[in-house]
Length: 322
Image (tube, rainbow, N blue to C red):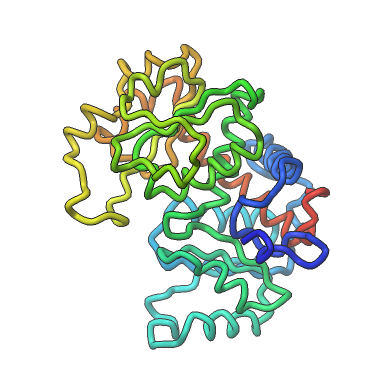
């Protein structure tokens, strides 16, 4: 997959996955995002770096945080942004995805931000758009969500910069979570100390995925002495009805309550990619409490997506200069 997102000179034309990016490339992207995040208004010297460029959001799945943050990020860098209304587009009339993409590319757009429920669609779009358009994966099935992974890494770094010593618990529906997949890829590349997968057996990936990571079905044991707790949404849309857990039972066994949070380190931070199911995955007192960085994750999403757009379009994908 990494070869599909790079030009012959190894610069990054697309961001389809974090898998294949080295630690220096990830660090440079995070440094760039940090510069954008440092200003509360996100007003920067790069406010016109994408002036005259056009970015199209092509979302085949519902989204609030990701779509709006990409739109804000692009506008803050001076780009023109269009959200394709799929309900009234030619795609609805039967036009193939490839024809839709080549049509948009012919209009001389600079980037496509793609979100889709099927595996392989962002790569398929990248293969159809030609050499002058960058494709950014904004969520692909259950396999990848690279900008979410980056914003999670940024959020952790701003609170816990010594990655090598950290103990992370990723809790919940790991097997269906593209958020977890990308976060783990980034954490492994940056050599996080210990990454734990915590949840019911049916929600943990098989040992062929992330084989070296410890797995816990007992939440209290999984959270013991953790520095970071990353809660995950139950992905009901990606499972059979018979797989869906009873909400009350799930919270009783795997919901993050104040009592369970006390098992982690006293300065542990709590994360959740959203949207949250309060009272199922997380107690409101924890989600809104002093150790929660959930709202900060949302704010960091804009800065991170600014960094990605700036690196791919203004920096021509040369991440050593990001």
